[in-house]
Length: 303
Image (tube, rainbow, N blue to C red; front, side, top):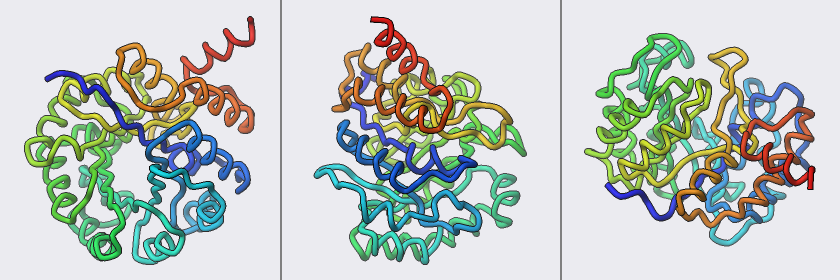
């Protein structure tokens, strides 16, 4: 199959990238991050999460963030909503898309939320129904599709089964996520092909963590199958809690550099994204996690 001519990048740094930061980040910084990303041309920004502040204190200011960001026409602002309380808050905040999540690994589901995959999916049915009634986009995020920290290999049939459940709920997009970053290109290709047999390829997105340095190769493998939506995080923000000391989300700058070199359009201002990555890394007082971003910034500084 020919590679896509256009790829949609879902920028997840404001939510997935920042949620595990130990030092509380000010609402001002979060709002500025979202606004800068909007200005850079992203079609979809995952802005925050309406979750319990007890479990995710970094997202406690979700309503304030949503109230203060500058909405760019044509950009989808997504929020994570684990239950009806979260959905109602998202609705009041004017979210364009709500995200529900489930695991392809039975062991991961039991360890993390003390219930089976089937039970976890059932819990999201009221949220999915409410989203459909409200006319809000619904996205389903499917974790541990290429490996699990507890059970190891995850059967492709499990991934397909949960994806089918999400599709039946009316999800507009379904994320196939490599939560711990153990996937390799051949397995990625097999999983994406299997899911594409039951769901239109235009609704499938890839969410790869770069723990073992495989993300770019996996993105290319997914594009060869026909996937044209990918989740990335500026400066590679977002640690991987199941692999100590390992990196998390693939860096937006690295993905954009690769796509640009392949002649694939994204509609995103690459230079602006490099600047955003350096800015947010500076605020967090550590080097950015993007090789391309750091190299370009260093070249600029040496001119």
